[in-house]
Length: 472
Ligand SMILES: Nc1ncnc2c1ncn2[C@@H]1O[C@H](COP(=O)(O)OP(=O)(O)OP(=O)(O)O)[C@@H](O)[C@H]1O
Image (cartoon, rainbow, N blue to C red):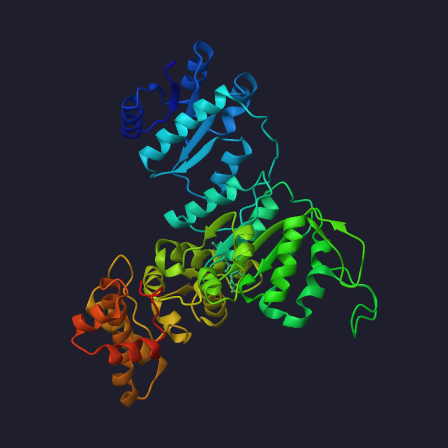
């Protein structure tokens, strides 16, 4: 078989060396260029099976400058690698129909696999679909976990696959659904969101599928359901885990057949709707408990996206906090800055309500702060810093945690006699979580590690709402 030939456009010499060594080890030929100008010379001299390109190059932008390359070498697969790890870069990569997009740092093995697949695709090309998207990026965050989310979003823009977005409340599930719609090929159609938890069980079917006049008591006129409203666009089924079983059956039938009829109606209505569902619940547990249909789960879960909790991506917290202060200022609240002590405190908080909680806090602080530059003290005074002591993934000393706890309480003016029991509880929670994690969720082992009996441990876990899944 002919050797694969790769053109690598990368101006960071050390990365260039690592990638070419990795490819050479797989018997792949690599030519390295460190600028757009050199790339164009190489392409006019020779043919390549695959091109790997960085985005920010010393003379130009590796994506913006691709116009003539696409014209002349339209069938050469392009793999984009970038340290600009935003949704914007992922989407730009998708706009030029990049074969793959890898935010740095990435796993070299993944790149090698992608190069081989890309070379194969070149041999057996498929018709590419065109779909220009506007760069209008609503999502903030550069953590590795969010980059994975952006990559998934970018992959979903030129198809209509069903998506299931999983994650705790307030992690941005709806925002991701909107991004998939607004940046994707259905963006000129409607985006219709329905929250299953907000509609009484007996009304859900009528809400989704509509009804004819007189279909049931109270159906005084005809009503167009959400499915029909979403024709040509996207239907976002939020809190799908709360959908009652009877409605699940009807939903499954609709998804399987691609047609619906209004309640009490005879006509079949063909659907042209992309389905995105979301839930904070563990659907596998719901299935085991007989509350969720397994066949519906598989129908919805074609592509899962896992939204990381905010506490697992502390590096995003400062970025998001500043983003929300800017948003608040645009909406007429006073302009505020954050100092380092504030970012430090925010990074240590547990964020059970995730990004939504952070957003609310920043709006409130922007409103009530007496200073333009918000410090740790201003946040504590806003009364929102949690009782909990957070030991973030990066670690924080016991002393720092104790002073954070005491500072919280001083500023909140709690009666002195209440502080000690609160402190015990506040430190017991991270202790229990840590030990449970060490014991890999095994209560017997955790109890043995702590030298208490299992019932005592179990009582405490229940009291603090600590389960197998939130020991992080
Ligand atoms: N990465 C992000 N960048 C900017 N804003 C964000 C981000 N993630 C979430 N938000 C904002 O946080 C709030 C909560 O997000 P969203 O409603 O999408 O969460 P959710 O996971 O759907 O919550 P729920 O499960 O409670 O419905 C929204 O105002 C959203 O705009």
